[in-house]
Length: 398
Image 1: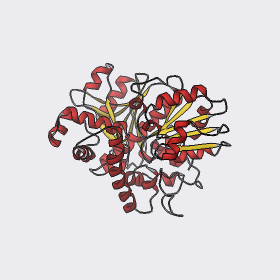
Image 2 (image 1 turned 30 degrees about the horizontal axis):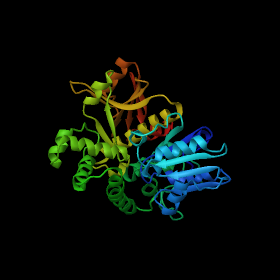
Image 3 (image 1 turned 45 degrees about the vertical axis):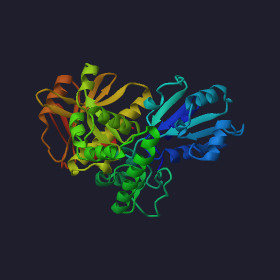
Image 4 (image 1 turned 90 degrees about the vertical axis):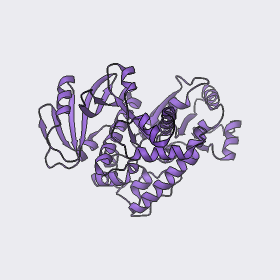
């Protein structure tokens, strides 16, 4: 299955370094290698491979190389100095594609600046919009290091059938579990995924002496999706300081395990002080029934939408939620350049328009959409569109 960002990445490679970032096993390496097929002499180098590291260190690739793919280069010392030098002295024919599973705003802290030398593309899990848009005869992208699904296994590679919400709710959107032949295979992948993430990526990112506490935080967050998270409450449950919880959450954010959705406020500093809601990039990790899993799916799809808009246009797109002191709340607020563009409320079965959603849509003068998982007929109620989940999620731009 051709990933949505493919053409954009190829286009941006003509101008600058392209950073392709996103969660572990979301398909970055597959996409990078697939893009390499468009070049005459591509070279893929993985920083985990000793021989590849020597080639990188010595800049020993052939002069005929026209696409240099550097996988997880941020795990090398002085990687920014290296990239800056390679880019500034490269031959005109050389394009550079860098992949990584950690957020660039964390990776860029300290050291020389790469400003003006790169574009970022964030690769997210499959979504109903991306899968439905794919050609039905295509083959889905496997995750890094994963074998391709057996012939005839898993969901169709594209089309509306492949975008079935039930599969997303159970499997999440990561390629390997999404395309697994059985739910049990997806569960086995997920257990190994979390274990590898904690034991490899977390320890590589930052030295943590108490991995059990971090694992417990992950377990607790799996039951708290969709509700404002209190760091103080988590700290009491885990038996550590609130600042330690903040540190753990920041690490999980940096490694694309969870993402924060903060309350929207015209006063940005004030909104950051309020409790965030945390969602998982892998919806299969969410516990608590179909309600939280459905809200998590909507959150991931909306995040993919705003990140895609930001990467494509350069404008500041963000995902927030709205909550007032009197308890009125709307699940999601899509914000562009500091101004709300739309409000979205996720519901399992309710067809009547949510009062808080209607109130805020009218007050802010923006589109209000109530996304319902099980809905017979779409309709409009005042300032609110009541939409069935499947067609709404498939309609989101990527």
